Image 1 (spheres, rainbow over the protein chains, first blue to last red):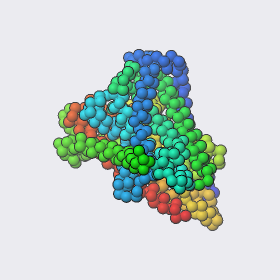
Image 2 (image 1 turned 90 degrees about the vertical axis):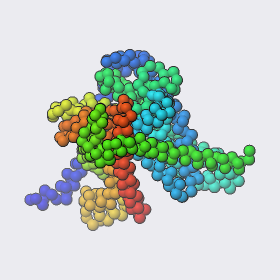
Image 3 (image 1 turned 120 degrees about the vertical axis):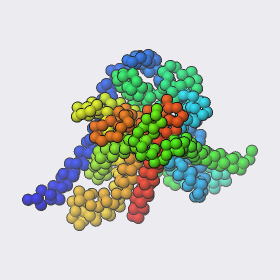
Length: 286
Length: 288
């Protein structure tokens, strides 16, 4: 009897039930989060919500206009600082880096940097940028902290994009007498461009979602930032303050809808771009 | 300027960029250690790690409750996320028809994209009241574990799926050819062959869990105590830094940096294990 119950067929049936159930639960997690946020958040949305500044207070009236501006400043400054060293280091690792101890150390550093938790970056930013260098709680401090956090992602995506360029492209260019840099500048980079853009957009998406490292560096200011030395409050942090300091779940939910939709759109664009890039790289004979 | 000069200059320039990243890495590590050292010296290494009293106003700094809190939540999350994650990975790699995969995989990717503060928000408004029904205030290890499980699930799923897919086809065909059922093949052949990759996924998920901050401080209650029951409130290492860093005076701040040092060691340790596991998995792939 027992043998029959635990027969291979029944075990398989039970196991498959479990496997399907875990898939269903994963979807359930996602749907719960998204549906809950949208049901609670969408009623609070509207043109007014997006264009009026937050009024503060325990009910946190008003909208998120200054928060959006703050977010845009932060992201623009972060990306402005991040792009050059990120892409530069990506080029070096993909095209130049010899297989020696220094290269391995650089790779090890980048890998480890990628694993450091956001809050540790925040603490570093707080002690070095905010306090020691006197940048105070400002958009600049927040952006510089984000740059440190995002650098590994930017470097890796650039490196991958450049490595995906077929060898034949380089050899063709070198054979025509171009220098290595001319080859990179006029052949490799233009081909890898969509991949690099994908990396940049990916970083923007991650920067939008970051909270912990900004919590300790960007300050807490709901007014309109007029300079990069002003403190600010990006969307993600605004959600935190709305629910933890002001007890305004409706406003928090509405802000969360704005943030989630922005991030999903950015992710969709990233996926589409990287799909096209990969298809293009595979399609060309090398 | 000759093009050979530009060639050389450009090479040096991109090298500088790569070198800058290593400088940033070293600055962060050295800085955290330098700032944390005074606390280790004053309190003593072991009484800092194993002290159970955290009372900054009295100069008592013991982070054992936070270490226990972090590990407790992490294992709670793994308890939920590991079976679900591996189940889901098997579904994606072996069982599901194409149509299901085209729904499930983007769903997993969307889960990755949701920011931690939103997990915290939903946890605070949905999970915490649910736990309150069972007992306590609801701000608890249990609530934090559930939220964290949802956050690390995608990591475990995608890395495990890759690992299962990387098992050479011959393994599966051989097993099926000698009469094993599909499940027997998965359980006795595919999963054991993919185990180092799966282990890497779990460890990376663990690293993510230990480093998570905002979602944790929103649902775990943050009270400094040795948690016993899953319904107890607790504080994590990350939460300890986040909650107190904005107002801490120098001595206190140094203790927070020392907390960061402990956190860094924990995560670097976990990551290097994951790296070794992934490398081993890679060897299998190339042995094909």
